[in-house]
Image (cartoon, rainbow, N blue to C red; front, side, top):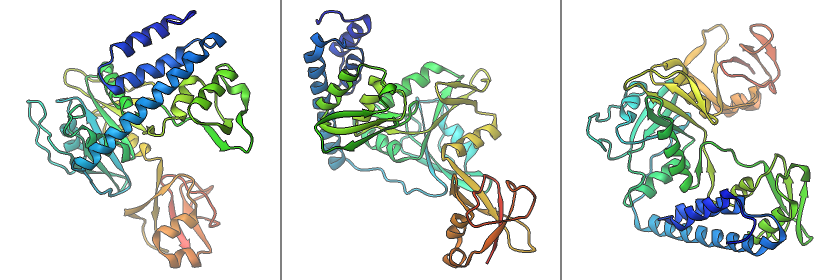
Length: 367
């Protein structure tokens, strides 16, 4: 054991020694790197920890590739405005949620593992359809776990189902996902790495480093970043650098739904995840749509009523011109301006084709 280590490093070391899987070892190693002494005497220790982490990551990646080749992939084509997966422990109420909020009719029963395959339904929000997929509670299964985690990785977001506001259930699911490099409580680090013609690591916005500069340079060099300029656009800890070098890390927006088995749950948050009671239908639908980070825009023809049945689903910051592109290339090529109801200063205001639309706006195109 190196000298001058703190309690957190010792705890992480014990966790590593007692780890039963490679994924658990990775998490423990990350904690060891994050809490390792920063003095010069521990330089070799930090290098060895970085090498061990890289080796384990490669081992896990190779195993995942073998499983993909040998297993049967579960592919569900994305439809509607976006695809969101529903996850939770067995008998947490996932099928009940899917039944209430979509057109799906999954089997609901009191015994565990009722859902044995993904169930698909469409949720309607403001005329837009959002695809919801219930994932079976088999994420720890050697036979199907890899395929189910793959579905989560490609989805646009996650709905976590828990019973009676049980935060421990939520924590367990977060931990399970992070073992597979899926993060629902964190965002991708705002750090840019640009290849440099000069050897070594150079930092821009160095004041954002929360660890010694030499330690950060050493860590990145050991991870294979030999000649890079690193732009730190946020306060940067060792945990952020660990995420930066992780090629498998994906970040998914999420909400949590509390199923009221014995009690109603008041709306709250855990970290950055909203926790909403199952019966608060308006908030549930709104927050599911927010996951997609998009807006709904309605159209109308001159002299006619607004078409609320087939809205446009656009990225945030979309313009009138972007909306025209979604309809037809003729609109896009011939568009002169538009009238907007909703976010404009007055109803039916004529705006330019570069006008930025807001959620719920109504647009009438002028060709």
